[in-house]
Length: 394
Image (cartoon, rainbow, N blue to C red; front, side):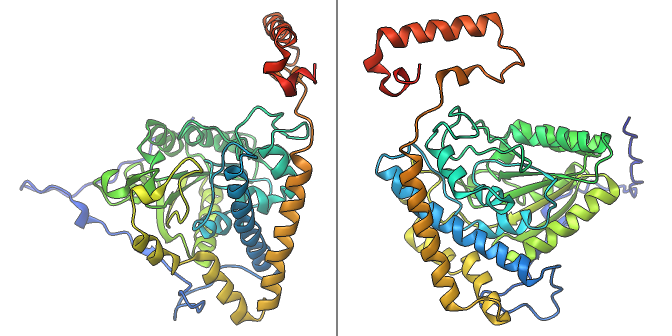
């Protein structure tokens, strides 16, 4: 049972005096300048060359994947895609601070996190083409990744569902005595959902070791933050629920890494939640179905491109002597070839057997599920031309 926190004794006043935004300020943690030089007096996070290069490798792969797969969607080869462009530091910087057994509950723009964990190029393609090698058995939209082996829970389309789930997952880790945390990714738009408030309150009351990671990227699809909330971002909500909170430059890889390292240490030591608000910007469209030119200017996008998180981190690596321009160019070229080759293989593989629709829903398929599957098979046999791919897999 969670014990009730002792409420702080409030000072007494005899005059009406409302609290407002000026009562509390939320500084933004910054460590790395735009030219790749660390600010004077800034304390670097724990990072060595091996980790730094793994972070950058993940960023390069993600940039290439986004470029290639968005093009594939435009060609009609896949049905849907979402990019991580502009938010790589928020995603990769945070996942790099975790242990492999920490559980990730992502929204839908964190494919860089599962890549960092070890998701292969082939696994990405199999999922997006929903073929017979897809770990999700063709049941999910493209980019709705999941991997039990990598402790990355499968993406759900409904907004915010993962937030209360993360509170429960973290509480489960705590009850099992595991020295691990859960991390939950979401955008500032999802913080307008009821699940956000329920999830944070649940974690705060039951003291779940979960890191709530908000990517405040400026827009909830086409709705700017100025129309989403009147308060001071999302950080103020964490304090309102009694959760330790920090605001960080989400385009600063080192700042995100440092904040998440500290957040994980605190969550484990105190068995309590932490909220990180990463101030970043979505350089790409919300999804392949979105046209951002209808709600924001080219000038605005150009301004944020100057804050490119991957470029900023690259300059830091160059200054350390851990990366050269030649290496950088080779990495991009190699991944472009690798992704294109994987696309050509994955799109030719057969789709999953129709029997996969009901396997592992229950340990043993129920009578009702079996009847429904049999009925579907009969319908496909009757109208095979309407199901050209499926008919050949009966």
